[in-house]
Image (cartoon, rainbow, N blue to C red):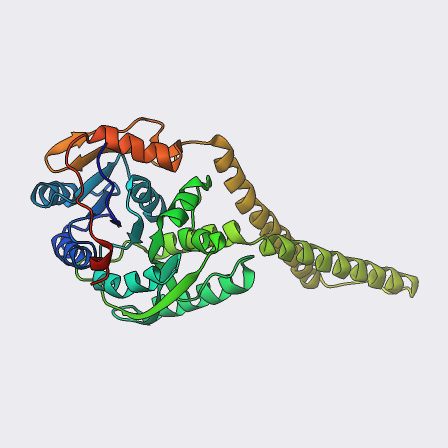
Length: 352
């Protein structure tokens, strides 16, 4: 059995060929400063269409600590992150994007906080460089709406950039839902979670992988995963509509008793359109929740791994790997790679 590393760094990658080498250089330097050589850098290729996997293969050949994970297709950021976390074995796990907007060097500040007893150290953005006004405004609106709707406290202005203990990662991986909102799921777990304020950098290279359509889908996943408030809003809209409709019927009946005919085709059509719109909104809200229940009930694998790579050695994981518990996943990884142990860092040298 291979010896488990002290630190795992997990980075989902989708078409990141332009900045991936620089990310690896900085992430490896940060990891070595806190863990010596007792770390692993897990790069997850989320169905990239450029040279991302070729670069990961080259990096794995050059750096023994690099572990490449190639998914069969594009699963999206949250499931790619879950795949990387599933392959991690470290006592501490850093989840970070490969676009260098979140500086890997902040690991040097996160590690001492965790040594003092934190279960999670998450980055909280105080400023976002290189973002459009629309992205900033929509992100601000999303986080503030989510904080009011969610049933758990989810810190504002945070992403998935965070350092987690092994216990938190194992609990996170045991949560079975397919429509994942990782930052909310980690908040739901609880424990001692500490914020680390930082200024987010602009992308090192390339373009954002989150266009408006994906941002909207991500927001819907977040809200429906952690709040039933929209269903209550639909209920209240239905009750208000019913009260208005009853009032209109009473008004019409009274006017009929007074011998006056209710006229006004425009007003009738406006009322019909308004009630129809409210009904469709309520049906749409219910449909969002129902659709997610259908997807969960199918119990398909969350992700599918084509191959994993360490050094020049390729390996395949069992088909049931995504559904295994945390200890079985680590055992499967040990079996897949039977050589190449991770040296253990001394506790006094971990935080520099």
